[in-house]
Figure (tube, rainbow, N blue to C red):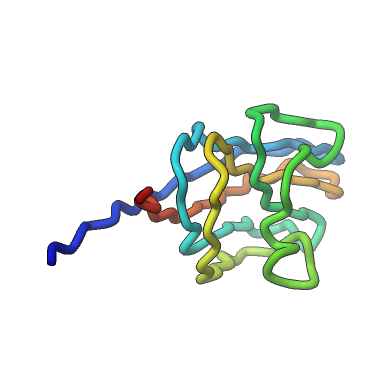
Amino acid sequence: MTEETLRTHALQVSGSCGPAAQLSLVSKHITGLYRILEISARFPAGCAGEVRVYLMMCQDPSSLTTGLPPGMSILSMLSPNDYLVGDDVTIRMDINLPVTVKGTWLKAHVVNADAFAHTVSVVFTLEEIMEP
């Protein structure tokens, strides 16, 4: 019996969201099936709970500035909260979430209620799922 090596990938999305604004940070197109192993979100100092990050799995590459992108909330499948907040912290979540839909994009939708711009970075660690 041979053992196949599964490939893992780290997809990072990051960007600066202006004061009192919203922004969708969009990953590259993921064409195959995969499992989300870990999500890491970095909040800079000064966010003071005024910056929310929604994690989404979507079937289009749009980057919205007026509301949440259409798609599935990753956090709503894992917790009662559908967004992350922080201040001068990196939040890491070990998860094991299979995505069995081909042709998706991962997004971090940032809602900044603060009077200052903030740069947020999110890393999705993925493992390919081999098709039979």
